[in-house]
Image 1 (tube, rainbow, N blue to C red):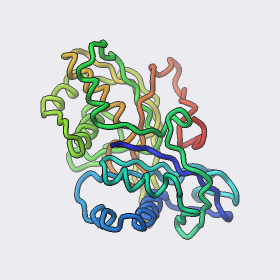
Image 2 (cartoon, one colour):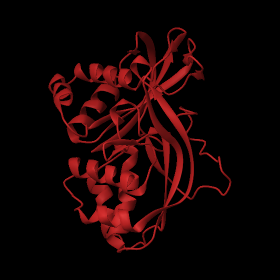
Image 3 (cartoon, rainbow, N blue to C red):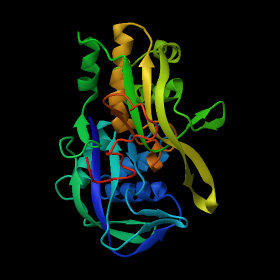
Image 4 (cartoon, rainbow, N blue to C red):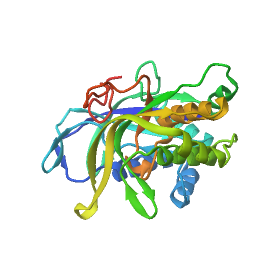
Length: 291
């Protein structure tokens, strides 16, 4: 089971956050989940490699020179995803029928005003299964020749022991297949990486560089925006696999620090407009509560 939910919040007081709140949001999410399944949360702390829970930073507020300013009563949100059955069950139990009254990030209390987990209500939410996504491998429908991904929070990758803040095809789809193979019983073999490297190219892009401010004012550079990838050839099977992984990205995220707010991404239908700077109105980094 895969899940993506948005927790709607309002700040209980005015606040200024100087650092990116990805780590704080993830830590508070785990503390909230721990009340329902302490063993699962302890396992998440100890786990190496991709984690089955991702969390955005705080969505909302106003960016100013000193950081992000949030006013009392201002609508905000966080987005949380689960990538395997235990994590998804815990998230549903924690935030489903009786969500917590409040969550606290960096010492600031936020009242929980609602939870959305319905793609018809918000395009960044939803539920599905690996089996449902994988079933498209056997579809007779022609696979897409272009795929557009929307990178809503700063995204970067580790490549050759260096930070790479550009969503190159082999890095994006390599990250997605790693996460898919970690949590799904349907595994794509190593030929997929070769296919993605040789048969996928960037055809259009509209990207901005975006630094994530961490502790001690350290900066982690990433990118936000939209990229259209062109599929240059290959079998129907592998081209469909690309589509499946593009749809999976909503839940998994891509690149580094997906548990701490980076790499929030989803598939966006259609190609990027001709003119530079066009953006989807649903970008959660800009308009967190509109679908």
